[in-house]
Amino acid sequence: MSSVSTTAPSFAHRFLAVADWLEAEGASRYAERIRSILADSGALTTYTAAFCGLFSAGKSSLVGALAGTRLKTGANPTTADVEAVEMEVQGGTLRLLDTPGIDSTDDRHREATMNALYQADLVAVVTDYQHVEADANLELLQMFAESDKPLLFIVHQVDKHLEAELPFDAFAESVRELAADYGVESSRVFFTSVRPSAHSQLDELRALLVASAEAALGMDGEPMIRRLVEVAREGVTACCESEWARRAKAVEDAGGRAPQSLDEAREWLWDAKRRAEAIAAEEAERRQAQNALVEALRDGWLRAVDLAQIAPYETAEKGRRYIDSLRDDFKVGMFRSAKKTEAEREARLAAFVADLKEKVENFLVRPLSSEMAQQVRELGLQAGAEERFIERCQGLGVSVDASYVQACVKPGSLVSAEYGHQFVRDVQDRVRREMRAQVQEIAEELAAAVEERLQMEERARAPERDATERWCQVLRSYVEFGERYESALAAVTQGEVPRGA
Image 1 (spheres, rainbow, N blue to C red):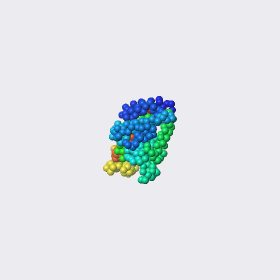
Image 2 (image 1 turned 30 degrees about the vertical axis):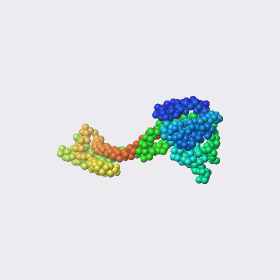
Image 3 (image 1 turned 180 degrees about the vertical axis):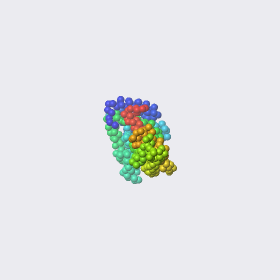
Image 4 (image 1 turned 120 degrees about the vertical axis):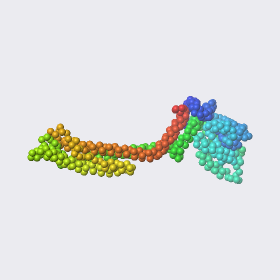
């Protein structure tokens, strides 16, 4: 954090609103800690170092020795209270806090210890010579190693050391290695004793505390601001903790593991969204391709109907000759007998019908039916559906007979010498129209069958799609909450109430 300079008092005052917000959010413990820091009239000019550790680690005697005074000590861990001694340093005051033992059985004492630690600018974990690796001490090291608060590790009562049992240098090295595992540099590891000891670094520890205080107090109130920000951020984390756990559990249930960080969750969400989009795109592309294929087949079939040569010149000529026989002036025979004329008309009709029927069958129905059946097979429909459509294709046809052709005749047009050509076109148009209707009906039913198959395939992929969508939902929920959490942290770091509060 950069120096807040002369703005420190007004900036600190903004944390009252943050404290009110934390209390409203159920984090009253952290709200009280902020108010306690703000209520300290000397906070702006005071640098606080808190000493914590097990009961009987010698914290009181150590603090007293550092300050040149004598502190009262409790006979057991349930009678200890937080005590403070102050030392004047350049720029203000160095306050040393002697906290109750962290192994106290009284919840009030544990809370008092935690409040003191939160108000501190520096934390010193104190262990007596004989309990360096006590679990409680290591847990404290772990807790504060993860924060930005300066941390010291002090082995007290080193006057108990027996050189004959273990060289002190070897002992000190093992302690420094232990501290290094928790991120504590060797320069912040001290060995102390209030009794005479060649190994005591009491003076060096005092010098470091004074130097740290004077350096911090030279930044116009920044130590207090740091404490306020730290407590406010811890309060935000406490407010979000249970919801974090719930959303992390939802992610773990959906994906088998929870993300280790918000950035990792963002990466997972990005991948999940790409997968969901890929599934949707695959389905859309397949649907589009299948629908386009059916449309292309239909268009091809209809084009084949339109282009089929069902009335070449010879056939058309027979049609025109039949029309000529229908005119009133048409007579056959030397005596132009009605019977011969009618017989000729029937013969011409039969010739045209036979020729037309053959052409329709050979140049339209048969090749189109075969082509359609083959293309239906290539679609890969269900066996039952494929068989049904092949039968439909094989059943294509137009019943061309005398009455079919006669129905196309327009008696009123017989007077025109050119009507024979139009008549042949009318017959062809009727054949094509009826064939187009049959092809269109098959194409529509085929489109419905393809749609049904697509829906079956999509239903088969529904579990994968649903799982992917669920995965996206829980990750999105996790990330959105995480971003609100980050936003809240950023807000309180600036002494502002988080938006939406």
